Image (tube, rainbow, N blue to C red):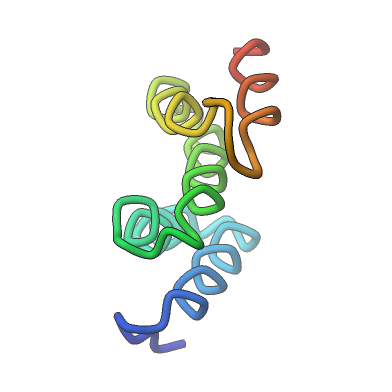
Length: 88
């Protein structure tokens, strides 16, 4: 899959596919592009899956950093992030 930099949806799917296949370095690359980029529609989801990606790598510190980014009062993933942070 070739992902163009101007297609955030393709980038998201590439990251999720890599994550599902345990290709964690590739997933990290794609998800980080969205987590820190200007595509706000995908930013929280990318941060959530990036945190899960780090947990698969047993990197709790990196996972916590991303979970803390989305554990605020608004958005789609804050409750899940807060719950997961409590477990860590």
